[in-house]
Length: 236
Ligand code: C5P
Image (tube, rainbow, N blue to C red):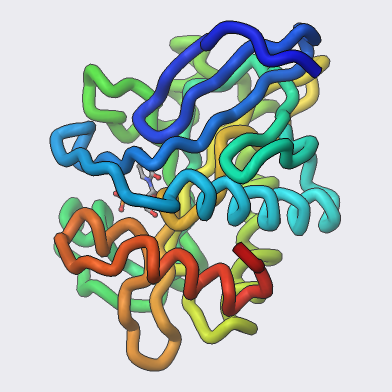
């Protein structure tokens, strides 16, 4: 497979076309950003760590019957994925109250959420990724009711698989964000799953082991990502 021109550069990843119109190459950069790109830094090893982390998780999900865009690793910081038509809706599941939920509702951080919550956000940087609902998504044509139902079911199936995987490594999967797209009309998991897009706490000490370390200036960001990876069996 031949790498062609850059199709799109996001805040942490770049996407390249290939000689196969159905396949793209994702390049995980060392760039880290938070607060809608207002805080930015380059962190050594981040591209490699997140690429390998994402590959490991996507393969676990695929093995559990969740369709994903991931195909294979081709370099320390690159992988091949299917070229999805992305749905501009972010799906968030929360098992424990933190972040935006605490800010929005004033509930106590660390409170267990039973049953876990499910939220939708519009992928739209210019408007700060506003919270939406199924009615708005349908009316504005961001996703059909059938696609939304599939996305919700898959997002909860991911929770079943990953909550246990991280718990086995002594961590709580607090919350996470997923993005989906269409390939031949089928809804598939796209984007990435890494400590950039989820919250993970040590199950005993509740120490933060995810991107909140960067957001809150706690330091040891990549060391924490690598520790999470080691605990679930990834070798970097
Ligand atoms: O900020 P909030 O608490 O709503 O985020 C919920 C989860 O979704 C967190 O794990 C956060 O890292 C992730 N997220 C993300 N990208 C966004 C918004 C949220 O990865 N644009």
